[in-house]
Image (cartoon, rainbow over all chains, first blue to last red; front, side):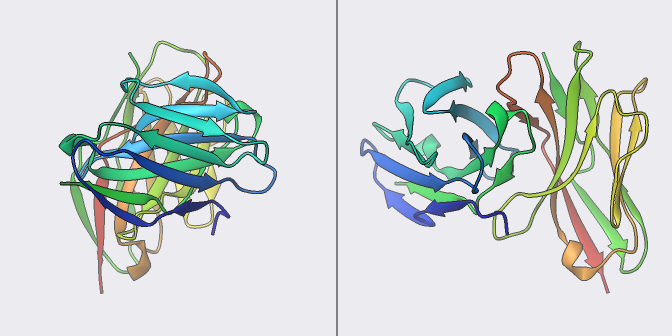
Length: 113
Length: 116
């Protein structure tokens, strides 16, 4: 096990609602990256947080936002949910701003109806 | 733009035999990192092996080895002595080094099934 935890494990929402996903990083890691994995696809980078600041963002709209806390845990918030937001959301923790190997949590499966 | 290509959607291998999973990549950067991850049906991505672009030796981790051919831009994963627990989805990924985020770019994945 990596020591990276995510909550909740599963979530069902309806279109237009808002959702918050949580991630606790591995001890000693100061960087959290979030990825979206649609069914049958490889993960897509959403954004990364390093020392509580956003440190890079993929091609996702502003309704995807995040936070990182002083203990390096992180939240992913998605507003105005769309059906296409249904996916597995993975967070990964690493050291040194992502310059080291990223270790993933078990993911949160989000279904938007 | 950087890209990872995995051309084998699915592979079968007999238990105890070796199997090679293909990965090619495209980048204009001189410095980059290549990774393989395993994803069982539970969903968690498990790190297997890493190869840096300047590493002269092929990486090895237990039963996993990475056949790195820089000129051909390929980074194939070799699993020796396959076990039933190796059945999973396998992803090749490349890390951007310029830009400093360490963002990973993933391929489409290869599903491996190990037959008893």
